Amino acid sequence: METLQQIANRLKKAKQVAIFAHMRPDGDALGSALSLSCALDFLGIANEVCIETDLPSNLLFINGLDKVKKKPEKEYDLLVTLDCSDEQRLGALADEFTKAKRKIDTVNVDHHISNTKYAKFNYVRECAANCMNVALLIEYLGAPIDKTTAEYLLIGLLTDSGNFSHDDVHEETLLLAAKLVAAGADIRYYNYNLFKKQPKARAALYAMTMSGMRFFFNDRFALITITRESMKKCGADNGMTEGFVDFPLNVDTVEVAASVMEVNYRQYKISLRSKTYADVNKIAATFGGGGHVRAAGCMLFGDLEDVVDRLSYAVSQYLED
Image 1 (spheres, one colour):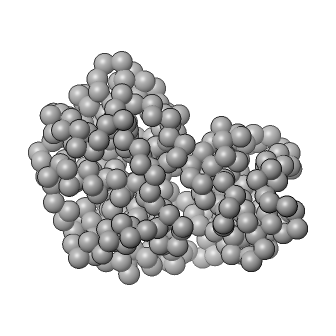
Image 2 (image 1 turned 60 degrees about the vertical axis):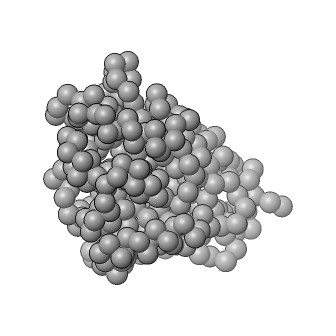
Image 3 (image 1 turned 90 degrees about the horizontal axis):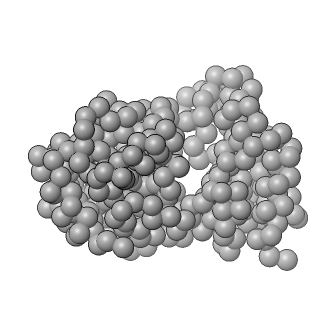
């Protein structure tokens, strides 16, 4: 595995860099990509940020999103992926990555325990947010963390740490947050926009979803379902469901919480969270997914109740008696 210094050296030699992040990006994926782009801009290295899918509605308040393209528009001589555990999570850009890997250097900087180290050069370190890795990479590049860069890094730090509530938040996480605030990032503004501000449609969908919460295995597993019909009825979209899975985990008896969101006919996006001991990365891996010990995800296909049954059985294997 490469060091961040070695990756920084490779980036500094490039003339045109393509920066890829995973499809359906969260704040950490977007913050990682945009902050690295700022650093490369400072160094005079041409670059493009590419994310295959539309950006979720809950992140559209962020400045500078016009920089994000769905595919590269220029030839590049180095490709870096950020916050992406495997190349399939790039979506339609996975083919672009495969072609690039045959011809040029590819770099993977990530923080997921399930990362498959799929690039030619990989740096994978498990931590609260990939923006922590990118912040260190920016230092090795010799670029400053100015106000704009600090804001992008803070977005990633806040979202993936659960607003500093997850058990992988350590001294390094908080020291970086302090550094970003000192650089001008408004933590109150981003905290409000990421976690509190919501349109009426989201509030309606939230109430509808939580009223249908289901419990299994002596209330140790809680599950919510979000259908396309319920989103249509409330006038909501997928991006408005960010954070829904965290509410069931607040129930005192619950060890594992799951959100089952319909994204297409018979296709469901599963988000998993655990409280103290269950390894949801292993649960997600049962279905070809992954992530972290306390937060992971996967895709399941089939009728809704069949999906719920298969997921519930998998969860039951990781609950203590």
